[in-house]
Length: 122
Image 1 (cartoon, rainbow, N blue to C red):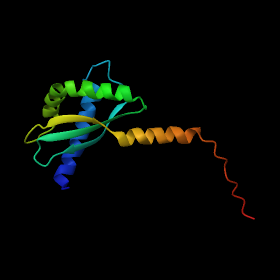
Image 2 (cartoon, one colour; image 1 turned 60 degrees about the vertical axis):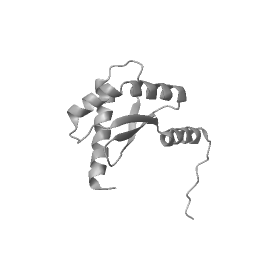
Image 3 (cartoon, rainbow, N blue to C red; image 1 turned 120 degrees about the vertical axis):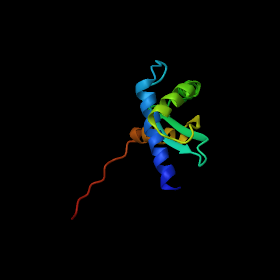
């Protein structure tokens, strides 16, 4: 991927995250939502946005995706004011399954009782 698309993805990620956290006043959205990854197509027509929550509630995550998808027009309008792009892409919000898996693994690891090793150097 070229530097141009990496910069565009990075800028979009920051801007979309800012819009969701600071400009959307929807009480149904969790304050613990974050944009984990943004992938813009080379023709600037489509943008896939991966969304994750800090908890492992799959139903809440699905509802969040639905809310964000219905708010696409608002998000695109705000995004157009924040970034300079040749074309404002169609936004597609998807669940970031990798982050959910990582959270679940960390919860499992916290519940394990692993004895500490003694590091006696004799």
